[in-house]
Image (tube, rainbow, N blue to C red; front, side, top):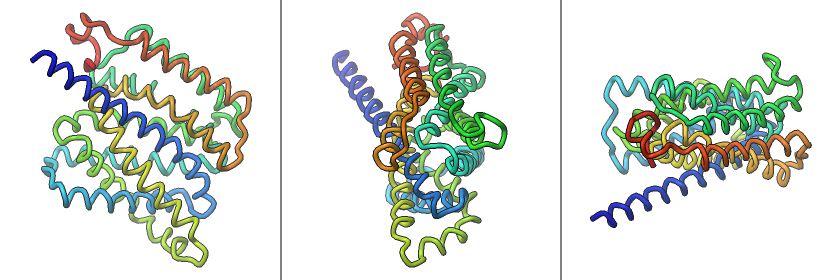
Length: 312
């Protein structure tokens, strides 16, 4: 019985790690794709078109699986998740990427684990060890180096500050959605959140339609579909599963692996150069991930005492 239980735990952990890998690859590719799409769209028009595609997939899944509908209280939480984690996040990120490179934007967004850890500590009673907080601070230092190399730095209203605002939005979304996952499941949570985000973005959809149907709009349409299917639908579904398994503060640290992917795709697909600050900052950020996930794990006694987040 114990061996069966251990095997089930190993399978669940392997599935969560796979979900993290899918999230990192799909979200890392999103940053360069946004840079391409912003050549044709406004920030909110792009977000509206992207999540119209994602919401269509979400509706199809809901019609097929018929999960239980959210309660009135949970519906309100899903609406807030959609507003903050989808609409505001993508509007700020898209606008910021007009002046911030794909790799740099990804590094700035990855201040989110620091903010997530703080919010999870306050609202979800999750905890990091001293090594965990130290690793998070190391990664934050790497993100700061990247931001310093962008036009305007972190001045209010500049591209980097808008992307930093997106990071705050995504951290809030991670924490807000966490209590919903055990009640509805990862995919249902993703579907309801995508629908909520698309609802708030729908007033901007008419502005995107003329661009999508214009002659020679193949690139714009293909980019929107790719953004809607991979990072928006598949990426959010995979992340939600990982979030429910690892806990908000711990899981968010895996997202430090997104910037190297974004930087490499930006370099290979868009010709965006990797500056010395980007390389050094990226190395420091990844070092923080190693510290958190090798030395920042809670001890068995701490888990039993309830002083930290969910055990693995």
